[in-house]
Length: 307
Image 1: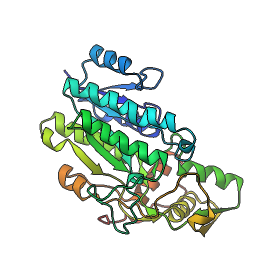
Image 2: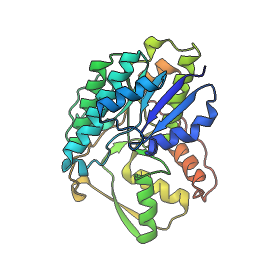
Image 3: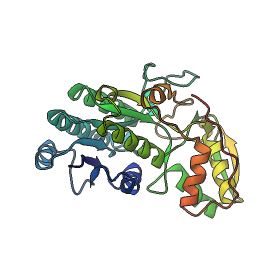
Image 4: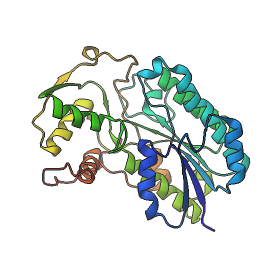
């Protein structure tokens, strides 16, 4: 019997990326659920769902990600980012199956101007970041073998994200101001989803011991970028004439504070899972090609910059 994998948040960026990739992993079967199909904030509903289905792993791709709105909707963020995680992790622990969850670079926000390691101090400074950290803690409390992936600047052709916002604004304006003093790395949701599925494939085939499938891991695309650099790359690859002007963070007010430096150190991920991580610029090219918006010749591949 094929392992059955539950993936929540089916219509989010990451969930839709999992759905697109699932056909390439026919040694596993998948059960995708949205809020309408499975209310993960209700413990009774989650418990009944796990009892009904013979699951072999649970991937929680559901999250409240409206960073600024969370400042006003703390209860909603708490329900999805903490309460739901607790219910899913607890149900997975009771079945003794892997539980995979996603967190954010925002939990660090510690002013360390070097690639951030999983063991570094955590200082979440927004409702969103605090609920994501609390979700990590809840998962590990009830399911000590939980696997948590902290990621950054996720984008895709689905949902709401920086890439799609830039593409829309470029059609409406001739000039944009984008912050240049926030540094990290964009992450293509499809790369993250593929990494997780490769890990599960190795686990279920016996190539990866279960003792490695637990703990906290950083994952983002390789390379370094500011939001300004990211916007410039988007417009160059799409042939947009929209001009991008660099500004400092204090010139662009947001309800929730953003870390100035959140480049993630992926050494633990690479050492544990032995998987290559694509460079962010190469992945951006591939994403735009899939969207049929890539108008320039393919550039030379970027070598991985270990971070």
